[in-house]
Length: 93
Image (cartoon, rainbow, N blue to C red; front, side):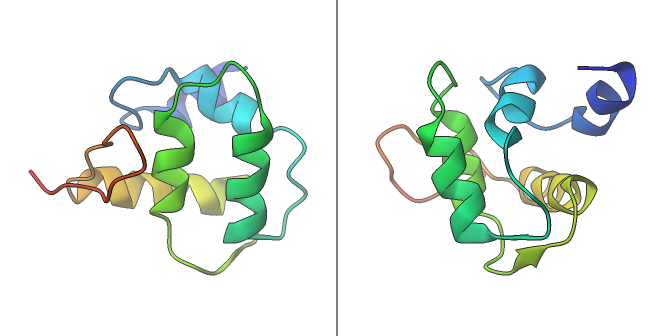
């Protein structure tokens, strides 16, 4: 991961490392719909459970680029997304 990617991921993640979000998105060809992004993130091994949980919360639409998706991830964390283990709904602070 380069410094530009790290900068774009600043503020995303509570337990998960920025590198885990990047690894989860490897192999996603943009534009990509939410369901494909979530599916591919779940297929990756060794990624913190928070990553697919966060991706489950993104808006149900097609993302034009990785930057477009990262903007959406920032939005959900900035509005109070707190990952809950076990597939439960996101909690508001």
